[in-house]
Image: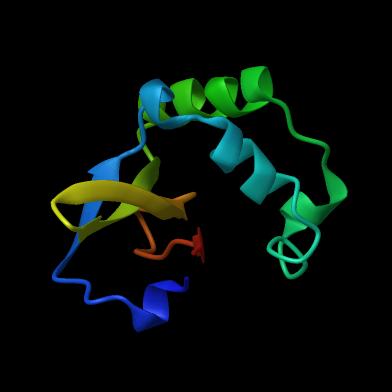
Length: 100
């Protein structure tokens, strides 16, 4: 089953929380295929490392991370993440990264 074939009615962005870190999330981060175009492809991730990333991002004043969710059959499913940062407020630019 692919998301493309489903009747998705709603997409939600929620600020990334420690409670969103799961084995599925860990598998995404360690997937060579999914991370092949990111700097994450060089890292070996673990649940504690991901939890630390989420905590540090939440404390940051110029980095923001969100979980991407879809609603299917009244169930919220985490399908990816999006991060904005390092934001340069003086020159008004930032990097954006995401995976779905």
